[in-house]
Image (cartoon, rainbow, N blue to C red; front, top):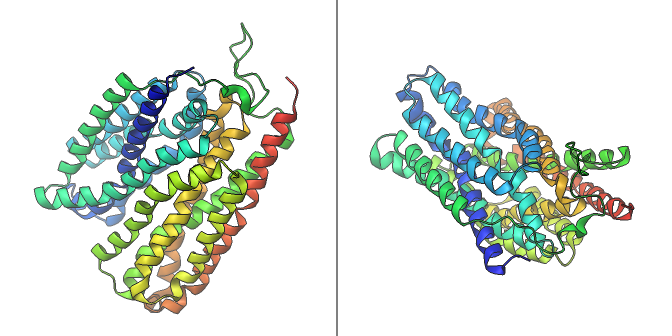
Length: 414
């Protein structure tokens, strides 16, 4: 059995990797305009394209990297993943031309894609008895990364007068963190890890083929239904960011700085709610997850009706509940399948959710653009926010699908 000290140390190191992964996802957000000027780009669309390319690459590679996470050392994959992710940002900071900048973010995304499939599977292996709590603790890193990334990048670029400076610095720090993880982390499985499913946890001797993700078509159908359902959740969450930014600025006169600060509180609240709700969900996964998501949906529906002074508070309450649902859903997914396929299952799960959910940014912008002068009136946003609340509620059947997968996996005989 693992030393509790080694497990705890690895868990916190995974939290650090989680923070860097999401710092890299948001560090470029405040740097679009200086990037456009420095690289002599003709449009703002060209300046935002690297972010789009990075995220599409990131989600598009999640399943292939999930396959790799089930076949090689997850610890090594995580260490090399952060190193490559950070190296891509160092390359971006040094890129003299736009094509090289795009190539650099592709490299960064390849490395970043390693984290979630390998880390989620590794956490479920190390903490089979308290998966929700462990994922919640690692989720603190995501909240810190999302919160610190844009604030640090904007502050450092303003202070130095060069957008490349914060990009280079977070890249170098990531390389150092990758070295520390490789040196200090442990990936030995805990006793009791095999309890999640009676299916074999490795291929038979002499058989190099990996076990099938799901042995029956019914399980495949349940899985894809759950993945699409939680893609609706992701669509609602991404929309709250993009639509929220436009709503605050156009309908309530927030400055860019004020809107950014208000939206960052969403992620900051995840630092509190991820470990709290992750732990509570170990006492009743479906019940607690459904309750948190319903609470978040209520806040979404009420949000456009609130006065200006209450909007930042409402975003904090929304973030507290909404961000807290992620470790609970991830724990439910990992408990549904055996360790040998967890990397692939999670990689495919976030590929579906990532691609469908990220359409929200484009959709929100297009919808607000069609409002024209009406975008200045809060009342014109009521229907859209009601739709987002409904989509979040529509994702709840995904919890039942994951529970059914777990029950069917456990009922199968070896």
